[in-house]
Length: 294
Ligand SMILES: C[S@@+](CC[C@H](N)C(=O)[O-])C[C@H]1O[C@@H](n2cnc3c(N)ncnc32)[C@H](O)[C@@H]1O
Image (cartoon, rainbow, N blue to C red; front, side, top):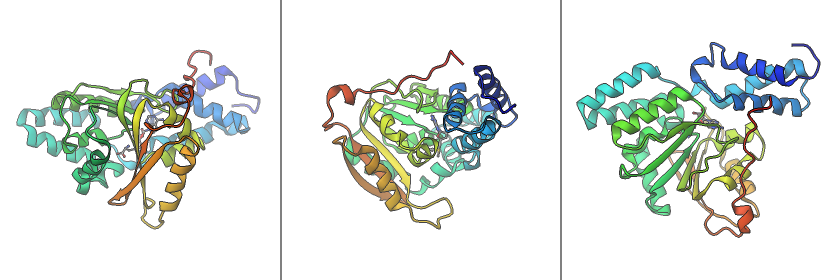
């Protein structure tokens, strides 16, 4: 790539190359995610020669392959086999899936307690938006919710989304998982609550301060945001920093939040219900991502 400014065609070409690369091809990521990251680097004044490298580094952090992945095709077959064996086998399969990914693995020992602590405070939800869900929907059997729950799950990673929908069908839920970049296209579906687990701090690295507009846009009464109390190696305490992240992003909105912690996961239950915002601002949504003109 030359050092002249990147054209619309250049952005398209980089996007195609990255999405078709050996690392990303099987993930079927939304092209708008890559284009958004490229535009962000351009807007930050990055030298055109360095834009792709910087974008790839950001994308790697967003997709976070280092947190763990199963063999999706093999697990689809294992799920169907487990379904034929019965409920216990499906629950064991779920536990195995939850243990593949760092974020959900850490929660396994206290999963039932974790959800009890949340539902004690917000009541039993009939509908949920699990945004940036990764493998968390496989915890459904430990949530104590009926199969009639409308469980909308969103992730960038398409094989993950397909496996979640296969599990939902096996477990008697509607297959409501979708591939979507929730930052660029927040869900429009109204629900009782949103789960935004272990991702808000990573959103801040993608775009500083973006949580605020994202949370405003979510059409729910409560948002359950969780954040790790320590870093991945366990060497750094992050409690004050995480509380700050929450306070800063809701500052001046008139929302309240309650905090608790289970097994090193800080749980913030943000209540948007008693918003002091004028209705036009409570209903504010982010501009939908442009798709066509690049
Ligand atoms: C750290 S994991 C979150 C784990 C999950 N919420 C949990 O606590 O078990 C990050 C997940 O969010 C997804 N993700 C990151 N940014 C996203 C976005 N903008 N839209 C949708 N999914 C996103 C990634 O693909 C990955 O599966």
